[in-house]
Image 1: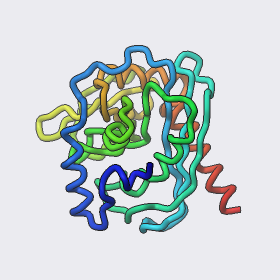
Image 2 (image 1 turned 120 degrees about the horizontal axis):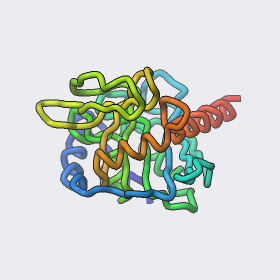
Image 3 (image 1 turned 135 degrees about the vertical axis):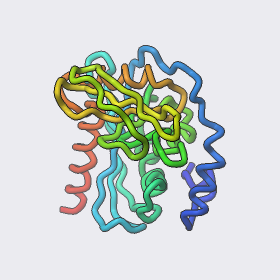
Image 4 (image 1 turned 180 degrees about the vertical axis):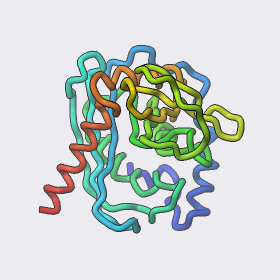
Length: 230
């Protein structure tokens, strides 16, 4: 099934925002989430283009064994951006190709880790939320920078965290994954809680600032785009 069969595909920012508003009540944000996921999937997209609809892109999904961080399965789909670049509506560019990559998997991951945001989003419905609702899978977002909100710097040691606040609401966690290194920004997408999300991110960062899921899916998407360009 194409994502366009799951909800009408927007042609304007207003239509996209209406879809976010319609899907937001479907989020399950009051559940603890998987305590010990066996498989964790990282999702990332690489682009060739200037930000318009129709830009070529490659979407990669890398499924890791949560205990060993060994690759269980990989999937790549190449397509075109389905929406122009509009802040807050980035998911609409990537969703069709990301879902193509997910559908090609034989493994059903216990947790999706998106390079982006969940409820730490102006409309409380980032990519991790959208993917979670459409797939029914627990999902979180891990951002390199904050999209919304304010925060105090967490302590300097790995595992130190502080709340990401927006309008008086905790929308995520600012998590230090390496001693003395810039934190990452963790937010819930669907069917999991913030504590479980932060635990998962720490488990996925034994050596580097960014989760292994993000690092490996980023590399796979870039390689696929380069191969197609060549």
